[in-house]
Image (cartoon, rainbow, N blue to C red):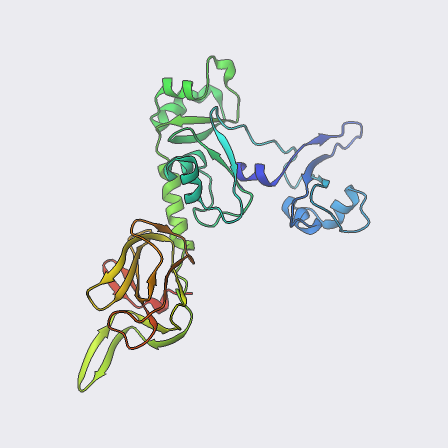
Length: 332
């Protein structure tokens, strides 16, 4: 777990008991909604019985707000240190139910690049759990830990940062302001490595989901149209009642939302990370607009029979590298 997210999930305080020959260390865990003795024990790598014994509990009933002592022992490396404070001018935001990073970006009027730069150890752009604490930066740049204050100059040169800007952004007035492990904000530095890693994570985790559930009436490929004619069907057709919600098969940006003159009727096209596009045709109603970012599973249209259609259904296409491919192998 990242040291940013850990602050929002764990309240850790170490207690060293020096009166005994074998000193023990404990973490103090404030019970959160959904916690159990077992889940807390697993988080710290100890047994449930160890937690029960350390707190004098006869049963496993615990309530939010309770504070439990969790023996640390050698397995977790000894003393647990509190996460470092954010640089000056930063705010904290705990991700709530239903919130997304795009919503956080809009709320604080910052760019996604700035948010990633302030939280370069994010595990995902789309699937963060409720309770993760985000650092909200005053501007674009990169937050890095300063492990060795004597190597500050080397660190600044490594990232190509401006020394005066770094000093101002971190309120550094003398060498005595530097502390091992402190978080340092490097204004203007692009979080390239974090952005590339998160783009790869998004590509791996955001597979395509079914945009609508119904009876599959036509497959991808050549199909016989009767009377000796045939055509190539560039997608799949899923029959569903008029008005059935159509959802985005994957997160992305709407590139087209309107009437198509090519027989698709009301059509929505969404571009995804990496350049792939999904097309949703014959809708009775469109619920999104061009330029809008939509999350996977978000409603974008309603099933209809507009355009060249013989009945209410969704015609769904997946385009990769500019060409339509069979979407059945990609849907889950």
